[in-house]
Image (cartoon, rainbow, N blue to C red; front, side, top):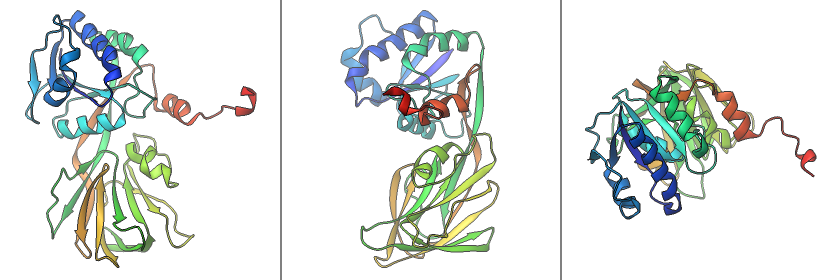
Length: 292
């Protein structure tokens, strides 16, 4: 099998784990291709007997599977590089358990045993796309987690006139509004009171951020609908955050959010489910009183 590996170089203490991954893949006689930035970051940590077949310098690459080594942020970066190629992504977590990177270090060897035996599954995860009739989107206009409309300054709220399929929904006043995929429902949206959505659901969560009115609540909508909005701001500008990457826009810039025409494939172990991760991450059912 041919693997393209994207990693987080900000934690050099994880070098031993990287080397264990390379060792496992070499034992399996896999072809290894590394993101050039990641390769440069760990170059001095690589022993002489580790052989790679090439470097990835841009999005023009092919592989049977992409490996994201880091956390959920690294996984989102890998997803941007994969784009619409349809290459499945495996997330290996170097720290705390993640919702996307949910394979722990001690599970690596068993996980690759299963992968090479064909004992794994892939889940389709929907992606959001934002377009503008005014200022063009500078960065990558697709989001696996969420697209957020946010105020730029720290003093005043913004007003967001929101439409669904051209029909007025409501006007939100507050710090912002989040459009989250089921994958992103456990990220930014969850932290401001949004609902958890099972990944296979064909839905989008619309979650207000610090709304001025207490009766403003999150809404679940169909993911094949089109969402547009007009923003007013005292500072005459606002931010669009696409999976955390922010870009400034002038107020009244026409923007539209809709489901992208491709999905991201996430590799999952056959004996593991979203609810396993949910219970571990959220610590559901744990009585903290019993720990004292």
